[in-house]
Structures are given as C-alpha cells and as structure tokens.
Length: 108
Image 1 (cartoon, rainbow, N blue to C red):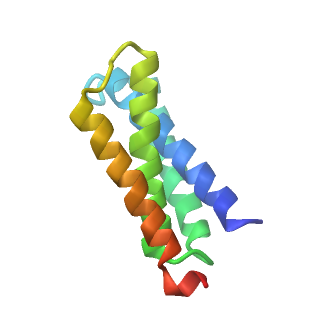
Image 2: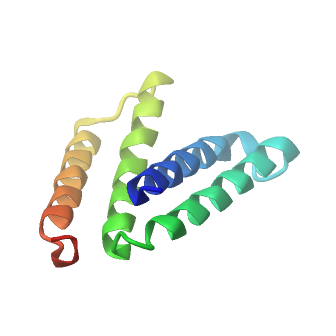
C-alpha cells in the first residue's frame, strides 16, 4: 500500500488522539483515555509503516506539520480562533515542510 496513505492514517490517528486529551480529564476517564491510547498507538504504527519507504525526517516533518494545522483547524471549528502569530507560525511550518520535501535528496 502507498506509504503516503499510511502517513495520512498516522496523522488522522494522532489528531483524534490529541483531540481526546482534554476529555480524559488527566487520564481519569476510562473511555476517552482508552481512545487516546489507541489513537496514539495507531499513529505510531502507521508512521512506522510509512517510514519503510518515506525517509523518517520527511515523514516526521509532514506528520508534525499536518497535525499542528489540523488541530488548529479543529479548534477554529470549536470557536477558538488563533491569533495572528499562530497563523503566521503555521504558514512557516507549511513552508518548512514543503522545503524539506522539495530538497530531500532521498526523494529524487
């Protein structure tokens, strides 16, 4: 299967798990805590599959950058608007991930 598909599954799993963190109430609520653990476990599993053919530094940069942007977008849908510094920072992250992908010698 395509490594970028696995990477996408890793990103979605991590975003779901991170979104569940506040609901766990410090890991004191059982079901959200289990969901969080399963989400992070799936994220690392799929990331390990993705790194079979995507260089680790590239996969991790995409995983982190996409996760930050998606979590922020979820926050916007929940009424938490980011400030201009946050938006600018995310733009820099996207640019950085793009540069890593474009200039990674192991991808050419």
